[in-house]
Amino acid sequence: MAKKKRTTPSQEQYQTLAKSYEMKRPVLKNCLFAFLIGGLICALGQCFTVMYYTFFDFTEKTAGNPTVATMIFLSTLVTGLGFYDRIAQVAGAGTAVPVTGFANSITSAAMEHRTEGYVLGVGGQMFKLAGSVIVFGTVAAFVLAIIKTLLIKAGVI
Image (cartoon, rainbow, N blue to C red; front, side):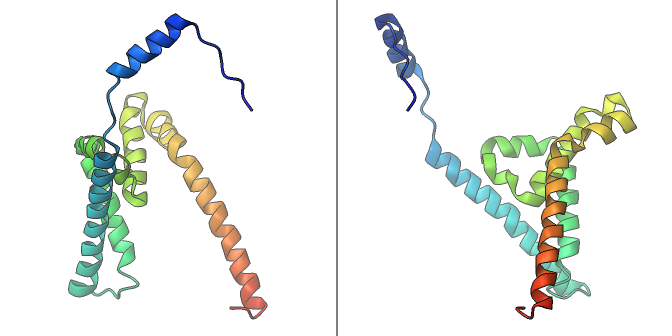
Protein backbone atom coordinates (compact mmCIF):
# COMPACT_ATOMS: atom_id res chain seq x y z
CA MET A 1 0.00 0.00 0.00
CA ALA A 2 1.32 3.42 -0.95
CA LYS A 3 2.15 5.86 1.80
CA LYS A 4 0.19 9.08 1.76
CA LYS A 5 2.43 12.09 1.62
CA ARG A 6 2.11 14.35 4.65
CA THR A 7 1.03 17.86 3.86
CA THR A 8 1.47 21.00 5.87
CA PRO A 9 -1.54 23.01 7.05
CA SER A 10 -0.84 25.68 4.44
CA GLN A 11 -0.76 23.04 1.69
CA GLU A 12 -4.07 21.62 2.90
CA GLN A 13 -5.54 25.13 2.95
CA TYR A 14 -4.32 25.69 -0.60
CA GLN A 15 -5.82 22.36 -1.76
CA THR A 16 -9.17 23.31 -0.23
CA LEU A 17 -9.08 26.72 -1.93
CA ALA A 18 -8.08 25.18 -5.27
CA LYS A 19 -10.94 22.65 -5.09
CA SER A 20 -13.44 25.43 -4.46
CA TYR A 21 -12.42 27.14 -7.75
CA GLU A 22 -12.13 23.94 -9.77
CA MET A 23 -14.73 23.61 -12.52
CA LYS A 24 -17.02 20.65 -12.20
CA ARG A 25 -16.89 18.43 -15.26
CA PRO A 26 -20.24 17.79 -16.93
CA VAL A 27 -19.66 14.04 -17.20
CA LEU A 28 -23.26 13.12 -18.00
CA LYS A 29 -23.51 15.80 -20.71
CA ASN A 30 -20.16 14.72 -22.21
CA CYS A 31 -21.25 11.06 -22.25
CA LEU A 32 -24.54 11.98 -23.88
CA PHE A 33 -22.86 14.01 -26.64
CA ALA A 34 -20.29 11.24 -27.24
CA PHE A 35 -23.09 8.67 -27.49
CA LEU A 36 -25.25 10.79 -29.80
CA ILE A 37 -22.54 11.95 -32.19
CA GLY A 38 -20.85 8.54 -32.28
CA GLY A 39 -24.27 7.05 -32.98
CA LEU A 40 -24.89 9.58 -35.76
CA ILE A 41 -21.58 8.65 -37.38
CA CYS A 42 -22.52 4.97 -37.22
CA ALA A 43 -26.04 5.72 -38.52
CA LEU A 44 -24.52 7.62 -41.44
CA GLY A 45 -22.39 4.56 -42.22
CA GLN A 46 -25.50 2.38 -42.07
CA CYS A 47 -27.28 4.75 -44.46
CA PHE A 48 -24.43 4.37 -46.94
CA THR A 49 -24.60 0.58 -46.60
CA VAL A 50 -28.33 0.58 -47.31
CA MET A 51 -27.81 2.98 -50.22
CA TYR A 52 -25.15 0.74 -51.78
CA TYR A 53 -27.19 -2.44 -51.69
CA THR A 54 -30.47 -0.71 -52.60
CA PHE A 55 -29.40 1.49 -55.51
CA PHE A 56 -26.21 -0.20 -56.70
CA ASP A 57 -25.26 -3.75 -57.56
CA PHE A 58 -24.08 -4.79 -54.09
CA THR A 59 -25.33 -7.42 -51.70
CA GLU A 60 -25.70 -6.73 -47.99
CA LYS A 61 -22.36 -8.48 -47.42
CA THR A 62 -20.43 -6.68 -50.16
CA ALA A 63 -21.86 -3.22 -49.42
CA GLY A 64 -19.47 -2.90 -46.46
CA ASN A 65 -16.39 -2.25 -48.59
CA PRO A 66 -17.67 0.87 -50.40
CA THR A 67 -19.24 2.04 -47.13
CA VAL A 68 -15.87 1.94 -45.36
CA ALA A 69 -14.21 3.71 -48.29
CA THR A 70 -16.90 6.41 -48.26
CA MET A 71 -16.59 6.93 -44.50
CA ILE A 72 -12.79 7.19 -44.78
CA PHE A 73 -13.14 9.72 -47.61
CA LEU A 74 -15.68 11.81 -45.68
CA SER A 75 -13.61 11.72 -42.49
CA THR A 76 -10.50 12.77 -44.38
CA LEU A 77 -12.40 15.55 -46.14
CA VAL A 78 -13.96 16.85 -42.91
CA THR A 79 -10.54 16.72 -41.20
CA GLY A 80 -8.90 18.57 -44.09
CA LEU A 81 -11.55 21.28 -43.97
CA GLY A 82 -11.00 21.68 -40.22
CA PHE A 83 -14.44 20.58 -39.03
CA TYR A 84 -13.49 17.24 -37.44
CA ASP A 85 -11.67 18.94 -34.56
CA ARG A 86 -14.68 21.15 -33.85
CA ILE A 87 -16.97 18.12 -33.82
CA ALA A 88 -14.50 16.27 -31.56
CA GLN A 89 -14.51 19.15 -29.07
CA VAL A 90 -18.23 18.60 -28.57
CA ALA A 91 -18.40 14.83 -29.01
CA GLY A 92 -15.15 13.80 -27.33
CA ALA A 93 -14.72 10.04 -27.60
CA GLY A 94 -17.79 9.79 -29.82
CA THR A 95 -15.64 10.74 -32.81
CA ALA A 96 -13.26 7.87 -32.10
CA VAL A 97 -15.46 5.47 -34.07
CA PRO A 98 -12.78 3.12 -35.48
CA VAL A 99 -12.87 3.91 -39.21
CA THR A 100 -13.42 7.66 -39.02
CA GLY A 101 -11.17 8.15 -36.00
CA PHE A 102 -8.34 6.25 -37.66
CA ALA A 103 -8.71 8.25 -40.89
CA ASN A 104 -8.73 11.46 -38.85
CA SER A 105 -5.53 10.52 -37.01
CA ILE A 106 -3.65 9.76 -40.22
CA THR A 107 -4.94 12.84 -42.04
CA SER A 108 -4.14 15.13 -39.09
CA ALA A 109 -0.58 13.83 -38.89
CA ALA A 110 -0.12 14.18 -42.66
CA MET A 111 -1.39 17.76 -42.60
CA GLU A 112 0.79 18.65 -39.63
CA HIS A 113 4.01 17.41 -41.28
CA ARG A 114 3.39 18.43 -44.90
CA THR A 115 5.94 21.26 -44.69
CA GLU A 116 8.69 18.68 -44.12
CA GLY A 117 8.14 17.20 -47.58
CA TYR A 118 6.12 14.34 -48.94
CA VAL A 119 8.50 11.49 -48.21
CA LEU A 120 10.03 12.32 -44.83
CA GLY A 121 7.22 14.58 -43.63
CA VAL A 122 3.90 13.20 -44.78
CA GLY A 123 4.96 9.63 -45.56
CA GLY A 124 7.24 9.20 -42.57
CA GLN A 125 5.26 10.97 -39.88
CA MET A 126 1.64 10.11 -40.59
CA PHE A 127 2.06 6.49 -39.57
CA LYS A 128 3.73 7.19 -36.22
CA LEU A 129 0.38 7.21 -34.47
CA ALA A 130 -1.37 4.78 -36.79
CA GLY A 131 1.55 2.40 -37.25
CA SER A 132 0.94 0.50 -34.04
CA VAL A 133 -2.72 0.01 -34.97
CA ILE A 134 -1.72 -1.37 -38.37
CA VAL A 135 0.95 -3.68 -36.95
CA PHE A 136 -1.16 -5.13 -34.16
CA GLY A 137 -4.20 -5.40 -36.42
CA THR A 138 -2.15 -7.37 -38.95
CA VAL A 139 -0.68 -9.62 -36.27
CA ALA A 140 -4.11 -10.24 -34.73
CA ALA A 141 -5.59 -11.08 -38.15
CA PHE A 142 -2.72 -13.51 -38.82
CA VAL A 143 -3.11 -15.26 -35.45
CA LEU A 144 -6.89 -15.52 -35.83
CA ALA A 145 -6.51 -16.92 -39.36
CA ILE A 146 -4.17 -19.63 -38.05
CA ILE A 147 -6.59 -20.49 -35.22
CA LYS A 148 -9.51 -20.65 -37.67
CA THR A 149 -7.52 -22.85 -40.05
CA LEU A 150 -6.62 -25.23 -37.22
CA LEU A 151 -10.24 -25.37 -36.05
CA ILE A 152 -11.42 -26.13 -39.60
CA LYS A 153 -8.79 -28.88 -39.99
CA ALA A 154 -9.83 -30.36 -36.64
CA GLY A 155 -13.47 -30.39 -37.76
CA VAL A 156 -14.65 -28.09 -34.98
CA ILE A 157 -15.96 -25.50 -37.42
